[in-house]
Length: 267
Image (cartoon, rainbow, N blue to C red; front, top):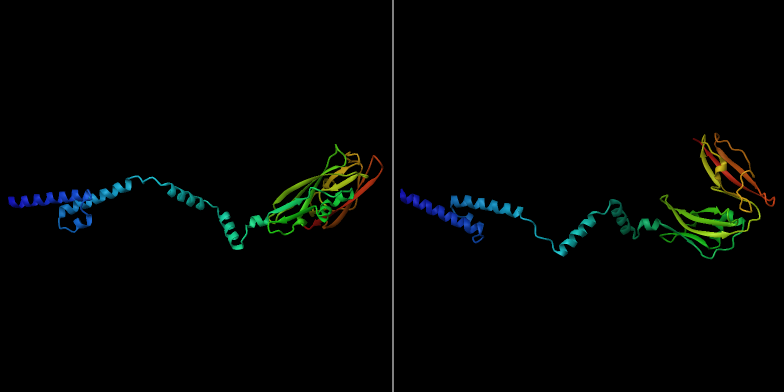
């Protein structure tokens, strides 16, 4: 009986020795688990679980500079918005950036032709025909037909006008372009509209006088009581109406007139 317990103690001791050798990494786990030592096998499994837990809890080694750069590039690529990704895809397919192709640039010459009083009413067309004004998109196509001119008069300096040009892109966005300063000798009062044509809905309230942009005498005086309107406008009845405005000078007795069109559409 004593021999049996001695033999058992020796086996347990051997198992513990093998377990310590396994924990230290001297003996591979695969070699030991193939032995028929029940006690040592249970200890080996326990050691294996402890080592796995230690590896999971141990902090990751610091990243190298190359690994940091790769991680930042991956994060930047993941941060690209769906719109930008779609734009890049369209750019790759068509060979161009749609946003850049849709952009329109207004080009205004530094040397403008001599502008007369009559030219102010069709300034955009005058400058385009003279080759002093044009608009092109990102594809190089001419978009001069989209140029809009906003004219302003300096009442403190009669005859001094400023024109600001803008253009509307296909997406509806308005892009303001360059401006031009001109000096014109006025021989008659000047009258300009905000819009030559106005579209309304039947029943909508509208004051045609609000469409007057500039109304000034030859000396720069703003005229109000010297304006008359001729024409018929029924805001409740769909149709096209022409209204003619007359302006009279207090300086030299001259006059000028301009016509605007009002389109009244059905509600």
